[in-house]
Image (cartoon, rainbow, N blue to C red; front, side, top):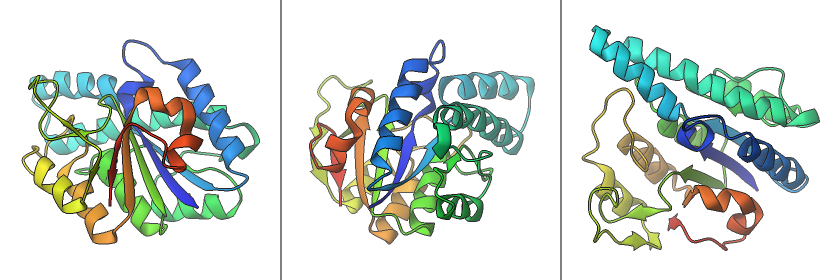
Length: 224
């Protein structure tokens, strides 16, 4: 099975780098790479949003902010590159063709941002489409997809299984701007819908057992 793994930057770096998370995830992926192919995309997360906030206050435009966010995401991606051992690529991929070539060499590609105007959700969704992935795994600081934002609405309900159309209905109101923070952005949802890629959205805790998620044992949201 070919799997694109998207890890939210805030899981990797909130107030400091979660070294154990990086090492544990890479150990699992290296082990699972005997039977599956993996490509990893890492977001910019909290630290990227802080850079973007400050630079926006200074007066920089959104395209400039996108480039800054991309660079932070690449730094986060380099943490995983450093922990993949013999399966590590020689560099973080800046485009999909490089990522696919890296995969064909028997290595595990890692990416951060690649396109200004696109969140790493969109990047990872396009990557999944480009490489014809069988599964897209999205790990975020929310443990699945809810009918409304659980951080704002205490009565929000987590959804176990939804269609791609349902997902798009839920996220379509998300703003398209640098540093946006959502369970998944609308462009990514549209790409996943058109490519019909099976998608699972899970929280940080479930990163401890990627094998179980692949086998369908998880507490997140499955999108089909």
